[in-house]
Length: 229
Image (cartoon, rainbow, N blue to C red; front, side, top):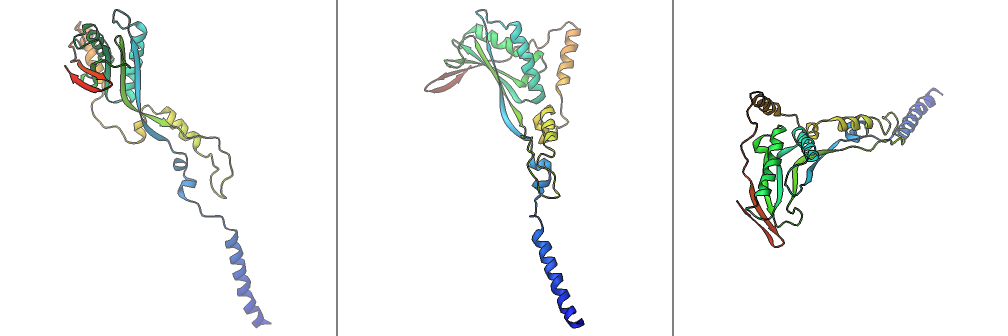
């Protein structure tokens, strides 16, 4: 009996191990357990656009100046490159359109933008931007928030499906500049320096940003485009 027991015991042990292995859950990957990978906050490029329409006097209204204020603040917080100002004109010598472009540019400079960040131009024969109209645009980024409220079953000993999703959405919704999620900001100059200079000039009674910016002119038509000054 002792010999029989010695042969049976290993067989029972093998069967027990095989049974345990058969009940083991499927292996999971790091994506299944890391909520940052399972519910990613995706940063995507975008273009911010502001449409303006002036009256016969080619003057910015109070409402337009408020919209420019908000537009400039968005650029300072999360814009890149420069603000392109396209003003519809009847021709290269349209002084009303040039004055309107300068007024928009000076308003943006007064809000704290730097001279190299403001690029006004006249647009001629463009059906999308006729005389008396202006379009401002700059490159920016937006956050694509992950969808939540998925309460489906999860693998054993793993976080539930929606774990960490709300946290990811909150981070994406609160970030001032989506690009901060991809790369830390450098230690370069900030727009507060520009604002301090403007305030200092104002306190001394000097004009702020009184130097006109160069305004280029571009002709657009169905057959192509050409540029000029």
